[in-house]
Length: 100
Image (cartoon, rainbow, N blue to C red; front, side):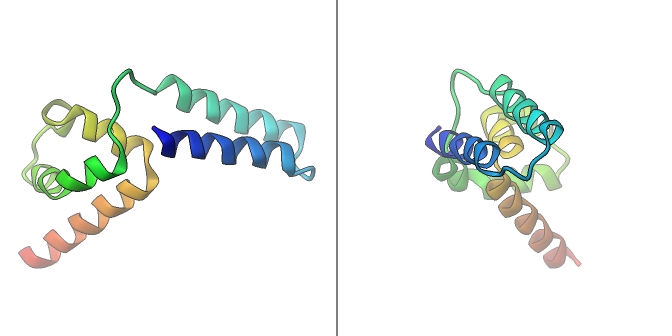
């Protein structure tokens, strides 16, 4: 959750610190922040926890398993976290290359 809080702080700093942003841009940034807050859950995994199982998650994706149902906390984290999503995409590419 601390990563999320850090992202929120960075977003707020961008909103307040960039005087070149138009009011419409600031409104869109705030809407994005509110959308992210709405998606937070009571229990969430951190990047370290996701990293421990991301290989199994990638294999499930390749096998066509419904990861939202199989590993809902991992699924949610990957939806919210760009770094973990990029890690998953790289793993999926590696799996595809190995299969070829």
